[in-house]
Length: 141
Image 1 (cartoon, rainbow, N blue to C red):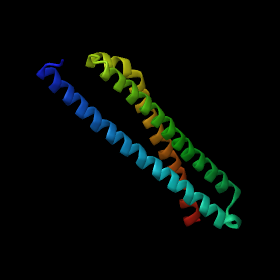
Image 2 (cartoon, rainbow, N blue to C red):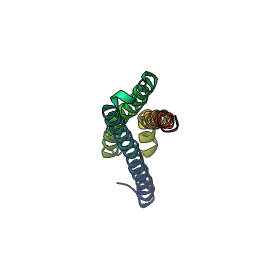
Image 3 (cartoon, rainbow, N blue to C red):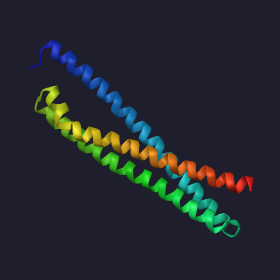
């Protein structure tokens, strides 16, 4: 049975981990939603303006869509890794594993989760920069 001090330590750890997980989920969902919306916009734009596009801009649109799709793919992988991390953490907590041991055993999954989140953002960022460049070229040329 846990002492009162250990229980408080656990609650604080659990509370902040839960807050962190929720924020990560919200943030990755926002990036995912943005990417899907922009890909839909680009495809709709290309279908409605087939004859007005030059081949170079079509290629740039393709690369922009590719970057957004890579961001979306990293989102899906991120969610699978998060679920594995949560499951492993829950199993360790159920076994009443000490907190430092839980942290040690889930460190790799946690690091990979954050790496995937960064990858998701980087692909979305560069896809959006390319998207802005293309529309700058279309609007001002």
